Amino acid sequence: MDQPGSVHQIASVLFPAYTVEDGNVHLAGCQLEDRLFVRLDVSHAGQPLTVYVDGDGRPVDSQTIESLGMSEIADLKRPPQPYREKVDRLVEAAISLTVERSPDGLPGEVLGTMAIWCKFVEGKLRFEVGKNSADLPFSGWARTLQPPPFVCPYTGESTSHLAATDDGRIVAADQIAACQETGRRLLNDDLATCSVTGRRALLELMDKCPVCGELVLKREMVECQACRQRVSPATLRTGQCAGCRKLLPVSKADPRMALLLDEHPPLDGWRNWKISETAAVYILTAAAWLKRLLLVVDKKSLELKYVATGNRLFSGWKEVEPSSYDYVLKR
Image 1 (tube, one colour):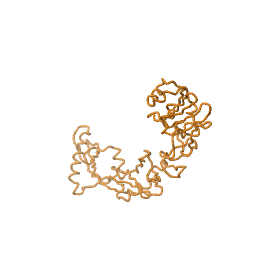
Image 2 (cartoon, rainbow, N blue to C red; image 1 turned 60 degrees about the horizontal axis):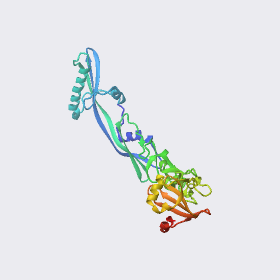
Image 3 (cartoon, one colour; image 1 turned 120 degrees about the vertical axis):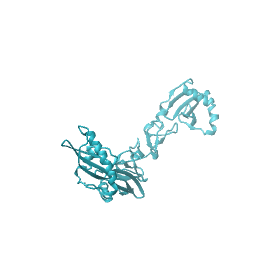
Image 4 (cartoon, rainbow, N blue to C red; image 1 turned 30 degrees about the vertical axis):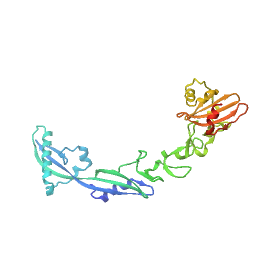
């Protein structure tokens, strides 16, 4: 029966299937084991019947018989001494099986028995790139062994083409991309697209615009002249972000205002409130006589992130230092 009988032959089946960029593949363990089958040929009323059983005495299906080439082997008249008792037991199991399959339920005439050893292989492939490695277990019948696909542990993609990222992860090669800011080769999932420049870059080089919610390269973010938040330039008009341009009148009965006034009671003296909100903050303005007030408030904590004052007769805002908040908020 034609089947690989050495580790070298197993390697020759597996290795050509893989491409490892700037690296190699080798066996990190490989064991070949002979597993016993028995074939029994009998005759029932002149009709031939052949059955196969495995090492546990269970019947073997036709697909396994064909794939392992069991029907193509030569007869072994007497099995080696260490296996004779086991072969005898399996022959008895095979005879019982022929009785079950015979039309009359009676044992037939034994024409021949055959002990068959098929090689089963188990091992591990190791892919190495520099000092980094990844292992891939394999197992199966030596005669039908096929190279298993490498399943990328980071993306779940099955592949036979591997490469290493610059941080040492061995992954599917087609999932690697270069950061257009740093040149580092990393997984696609480690990168994001800047909504302003369209460049693919590391997530750590990005900020989420607090107004539009889109990812933007930090170096591309600009400061709103009113609320002083760093925002995407796409949301700016005449120096102000969309949040500052879209302020709408709001009453103190509004639930958002009720929470704000409860957290910062001195604000109750201000009137003519207007509000807009982004994903993270409220932007508010208020007025009292000639004074104007601008607030940027964290939506979750209601912390004052930025406070500025102005004059109703002039445009522009002047930032207030945190140490002066209490004084300014009282008008």
